[in-house]
Every structure is written in C-alpha cells, then in structure tokens.
Image (cartoon, rainbow, N blue to C red; front, side, top):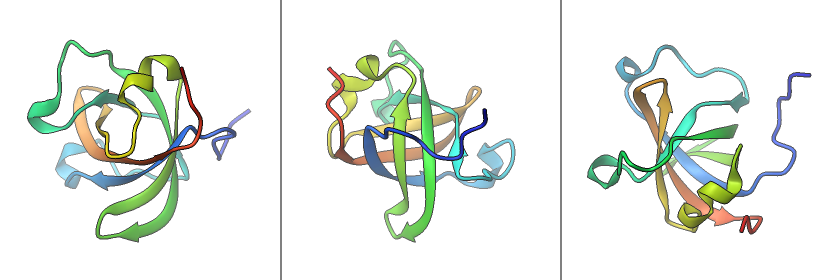
Length: 110
C-alpha cells in the first residue's frame, strides 16, 4: 500500500531545496523517500552512514524553508544526530538536493 503521510513522525524540521540543477527532477507529492547524511557542507563526514529517510512535505514555506515532518527507516542510527538545530544533507542517489534543519524531536528514538 502506498502511503501519503508518515504515521509516526519522529521530528519536524525546515527543508531548504538546493537549486534545480542538483536534482534529478522536481520533488512532487507529499511524501518523499530520499537518503540523508548528518551535517551540511564541510560538516559532512563521509564515514557516517547514509540513512533512509521519509519526508512529509507540508507546503508551508518561510524564509527558513518548507516545514516538514520526518521519520527514519533506522531511527536508532539517526538518534545521535536528532536534536533541535541539527542539520542534515538530503541526497537523491549521489547528489545532494536539500538541507534539513531539525526544529523539534517528537519521539525519543534511543
């Protein structure tokens, strides 16, 4: 069954999409299934595990980006990097497509 919403989000955040030339195409739909790596820019440690993430888009935008709810396929692996202010890089395949800033953690994962 195809889901259009995250049943039990573990955090909320703001996502900032990188310019379109970094993406394979426009992100459509309410539920997006990319990969994520803790950190942004020079803060990315390639030794960290690339994690599967679910991003539920709200369509609510501000200067900080689009409000989203998130869940991870392996939340215990994401837990050390889940706190308000934590930043993540979102990937489609090998390409970074967005940056995510965690605003609130809703469920303790560890």
